[in-house]
Length: 118
Length: 112
Image (tube, rainbow over all chains, first blue to last red; front, side, top):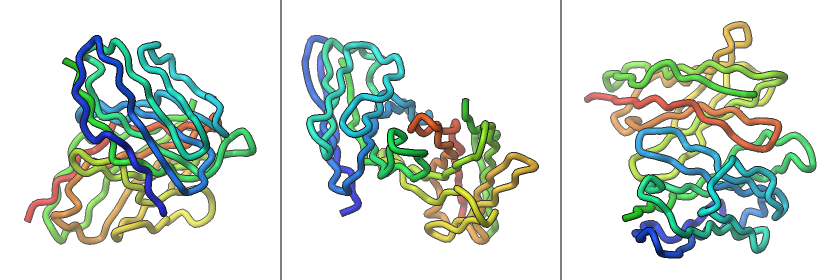
């Protein structure tokens, strides 16, 4: 199994809603990532988890709350979002974690969750 | 900090012709460089990477990339382009802090 699975594929929410994006991988990878991608732009790093601990938070607003319940799952909890938060949210995983050495491997990406905030 | 730059927003080639998508890098230490492709409304697919060793790296779907240390470049190439190669291509660099940074992207259009 070499897949990263993201659900839901599409999400429409109001600014007062609370929702969650989910990501799952069964490759035994120890690092997992959330990226945000606006149309025709490169992915922008949001969070990195290494061995289920948050290792990077790229100054993301607190209305985005990541969670890593176990080594296979990564969630992104959404609350009080703004219309400008509408984007494609990509989850990725990689085998290595810099916590145990230099990470040089590729990231495996899911298909993304397209979020629209009304 | 590590970074990559893609100087071309758009590259157009005719089907059957060779294609090149350019990428230059700026890193401290050894560069760990990657190419990804993205089709509309899809995630990113890994094409190839350079970590060490041979400067010419072969990857998926007939793509290859040449690492040039003196020119700090890592250009993506394919000898004969297909219409189905039309997509958005990202060059990326792996950081020592366990993240991956992407270039701005180059839209490749292959015309029949």
